[in-house]
Image (cartoon, rainbow, N blue to C red; front, side, top):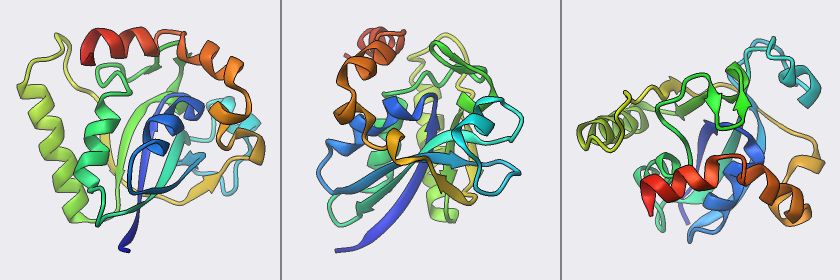
Length: 172
């Protein structure tokens, strides 16, 4: 096994876990925060929008089974890459879309994938998802982990806030 990590921000982290968790080669998907200036932030702190963090997921995967590029391709299909102000009903800087890279190879993969998506003209608005170096990742409280399994009704309510219909319109 060749274990690696990838970090993505795409709005509410509750909605970012399931699409990756169900893929072959995924070892774990953890909800948390990254990209800010406060060490060990709480959910309440990040929710104020003053810490600089994004809600994100840290994916541990076996790169012998699934590649970083494949993870990026999944990422595009579960976010609105044209909305820098948040994702769907979740608004604010802490919900902005970001692909965090850990090395130059990942940066290149993310940038090439972003360019290919832009060139495909799938969207009328420009692709605004940021591609930034990975920063410390802080796991959220246990309550937030695997939320789609623990609280399916609330998860479905969150998904129905525009994400599901956007995905259906652009990717199905």
